Amino acid sequence: MLPWKRSELWFGTSAKEFNEILDLLSANHVEYQLKTGGDAISARNMSPRTEVMGRWGENPVSSVTYTIFVKKEQLEYARQLISQQK
Image (tube, rainbow, N blue to C red):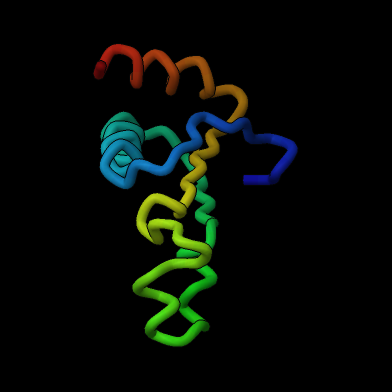
């Protein structure tokens, strides 16, 4: 999926919600792309003590961000699926 043909559907830090949305999209045959980021991702290259403690007192688990993209044509459909699930 080319970057200019996709739209951001969801952005957050909850791994549980992220996985629920992915399961929902997969079950309904909606094509998606993922992006993860944050300090916990880059912490893999640091010493073990830094990985456990996080940087500057952050919780490494909550500093991971997740982004889900879908095709622009499927954005409204995907939003409806998520709103019906809640």
